[in-house]
Image: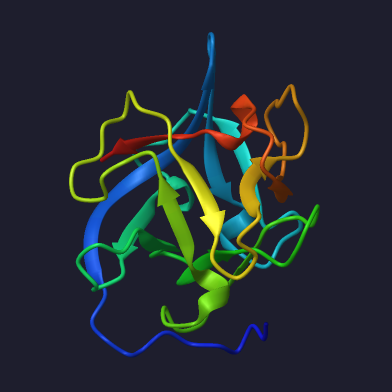
Length: 165
């Protein structure tokens, strides 16, 4: 499938702004766009310092306009970049573009996009690569662990909490 594929052009629906959080025991790490974009790795987790004011840690969730669709895009307003998958076992990338480009689309699994609950973990599955999920690179993530796309293993590194701001 080409990454140039696009969904029918309709107005996407803004749902909320949140921190995408990995929580395990006392560990609380937040998805951060490295250096505001254009760095490697593009997306990593960092400690929660400044998570409420750091624009690089704030993600807008926009949903596809079809009523029953679970497709979302994850957009960082300060950088203007979307989170995207580039393939199995590859580090996640961020890029500018158009929200209708399938490479930016994720199925939100485990939550109602209209009513998120920060206590309920969610998973993000790539629309472009439907067997791949947003994941952390290692089983015991620490500050600076990059995000990757990986086949489902149902482990904790593929589950995230959405803390609405």
